[in-house]
Length: 126
Image 1 (spheres, one colour):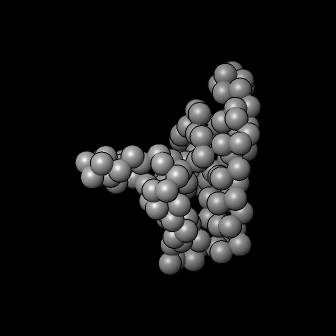
Image 2 (cartoon, rainbow, N blue to C red):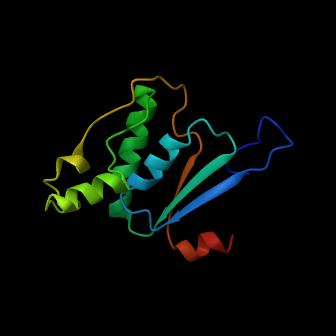
């Protein structure tokens, strides 16, 4: 098992698979949101290597800082930005480039996240 055993053997692991995770903002946001749920594991899959560079940098920074990255844009923020006539995917949008980190310290942030680079169909058929 790629995530290791659960502490409570009576619980069942739930896995969230994000196919085509792109730059990984949604994967990181989900991991932060459900950080206290030991039964939830998140797999991000992306075929394009250039898209994965961002998530690998964030994961490495998280390990060094012992914190979760909180600079992601939630759906509510995207809707608000669109209402304000700001396109949420433009590089100059500061919401996508924030370098914010959680103030709480974690010994192993994103321990429940795995990244798969390659054809998502292969992941599904494993």
